[in-house]
Amino acid sequence: MIDYFFAGYTKINIDSISKETKLPLHIFYPSDIPEKLEKLGPFQLDLAVDATPKNGNYPLVIFSHGSGSMPLLFRTLGQYLARNGFIIGMLEHPGNNRVDNSLVDTVDNLISRPTDLQTAIDWFWETSEFKSILISETVSLIGHSMGGYSALALAGGKPTPLPQEAADARPLILAKDPRVKSIILLAPATVWFREKGALSDIDIPILMYTAVLDTFTPKMPHAYIVMEGINNTKQIIYREVENAGHFSFMSVYPNELKSAALPPSQDPPGFNRQDFLDRLNPEIAEFLLKAI
Image 1: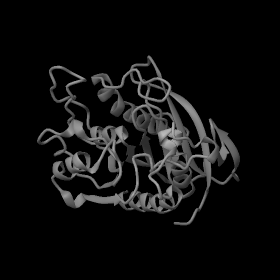
Image 2: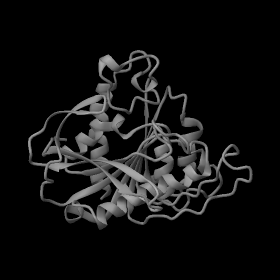
Image 3: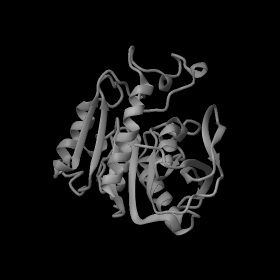
Image 4: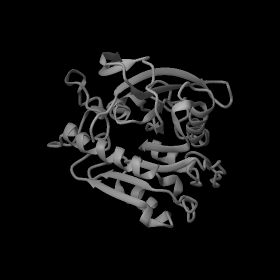
């Protein structure tokens, strides 16, 4: 695809449903204000920070990061989609991020993650400055690792907690959001949908990638759970990425930050993450456009 816009960027904190905590939200969007190199935490990226959004009618995408992770590890995906006419909100899940991981391995986390996504969607359409330039009642979800769980849960999946999360594991009753029109799963974590019928209510296009050398969420069982649990398998496009690892879907780390002690900065020997992302990002954008 060809870049048509400059990538605007802003960060805000929105109220959670309980109002007891804030949801940090990184927003990438089309603008006609030229970009310049900006510092985002430990990273740098060409962006038009706090620029006025360009008038238009754009699809909304919500991104969910993995357990104990952060949204800016996918910053170049946000930049790419904004340049190509999408508005994407990348939220940081309270209690399951790199700074505060207090909800890991809890039922509360299984409930709050899809609720966070729904809160962000509601904010965009109800109170944000972007609501007038969004395609109404349509949203796509992208999730990496545990973010894949979040996307499937909000789209109608019925998760069952793992034994370490609940001694008496029963399926959770979560709200399905009918506004979700497509899902992209990147090395998804899906074992909470292992029970028969857990994904049977999902009937929307799904683009799913797994990494051949992924030791965290390997194809078996994670991708198989999706492929066997979705009734209409024609809705699934599946890609298996040769020689890739679990973190190969993330933006490339600056050389000065790469370290064997920092797994997200590492790939299997011989794997070129930048070359892969140069192919992946256009595939994601093409799928999202077809799913509108």
